[in-house]
Image (cartoon, rainbow, N blue to C red; front, side, top):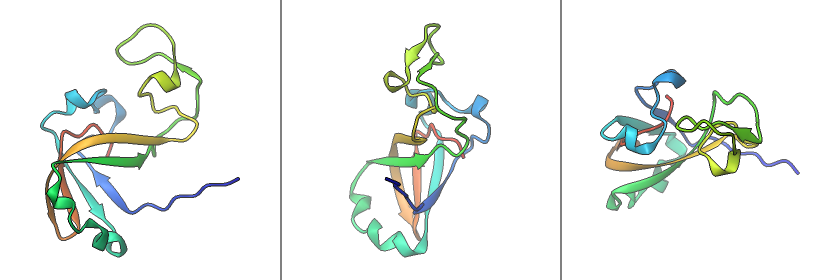
Amino acid sequence: MKIEFQPIGVIHTPFTVLESMPIQPASGDGVQGTVDVFEEYRAGLNDLDGFSLIFLLYHFHHGRGFRSHVVPFVDSQPRGVFATRAPRRPNPIGLSVVRLNRIEDGVLHIENVDILD
């Protein structure tokens, strides 16, 4: 079975290399970014401005393959990948909870970002 997804937008953040990106959401406190939602999906943003926090699901576009055990950034012991936030997953999908500050012309202005640009 093949499962395919289509992007609905692009996330922009100040983090362009993995080494500078926060390793936990708390480390991204106050960091701002944007989500440019593609035109054909913008109608789906109606009423989203009533929320202060939103979930972003995104593709780990710099993923480097899958490993069943990884050493987390803040640990020294190998752990099962599903017990970590490590990006080396069978499906390179990330999840972040961010603060929604405002929506302007299909662009979400977000805060508390821990996502690679």
